[in-house]
Length: 413
Ligand code: GLV
Ligand code: MN
Ligand code: MN
Image 1 (cartoon, rainbow, N blue to C red):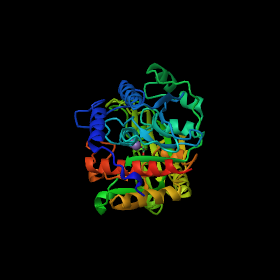
Image 2: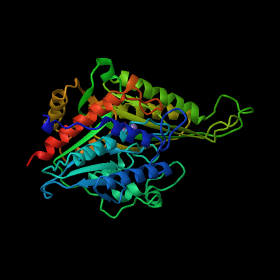
Image 3: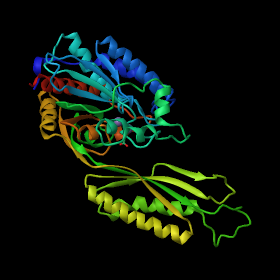
Image 4: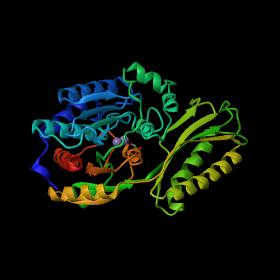
């Protein structure tokens, strides 16, 4: 469980995370490193310089995924992989994603420092556009890598300003030559903050997720009839924003109505023309539905969509619905989940079995090969916010579990 008794260097891990947190630092103590932004480019540049310094073979694929490969004794064996993502939410936190990338780098640095040659090669990965906030959907480049999303379709995704993903990737210099296609791997580990309150509430250090909820994303467009707000009587209006407001409340009520074992959220909304003295004639909003039970998520959507239609009809507001993205719930490889748990305990850390409510590239990785995640506590359960925080000791603990898991898997023939 603890081969060689190796430990990561917690100070070096902290130092790297602090340097990364300077890139896109926000006044509230978080980071804003939207996918393919100048800040994402800068973080990639710093990461690549560290990968090269560590002696890794660095490659970039045509979706901008960055890989750093360390040779094993037998380079023909499928590698062990570890990583996460460096992009962030708008006004996001300093740990979401980047902890898993820097944790994997710390593993590599520890192996180099201690002259450890593993049986299998070890590959660090920084996946492009995990967040899906600037370019929907999330986990886009791991989805292409896993063969579950089309590369050309992904390249054509646009942001709110109409900028095109593939062009932006080229502009920041990260449209690589390597085809974005999976290869067999022996194990993929992703270290991540929990992003929820359970570990802290239970006083545990390492979360051991057995898998990830399904994620379903929808875009809703509600049309209204614009008019001068003063002279237009209240009766007979087709106010797109009022109709959308009723729909949003239906989303809020949905989990309780469907029996509770799911979450449903409207996180994004645009109102047009967005003038206080014009009746709104177009509203766009998003719906995010998650559950361990894929069927429940689908039934919930059917239910709320019927409510949307009734509301739209009552307001005389035509409705357009786009199914943006669906990824099924994913269960990690039981032998790796068990290994994360046993390893954490062997290292003296308390553990908690759980499921991940947040989406991760590990979802798509799990569709290719054996995958598991390692969670560390989020202070006050806050994430996707500037105050997102995790103690340095817990970061170090998570990286130690990652190191030990990578060593065990990379020693297997
Ligand atoms: C990704 O961060 C998600 O859970 O939406
Ligand atoms: Mn993340
Ligand atoms: Mn996130």
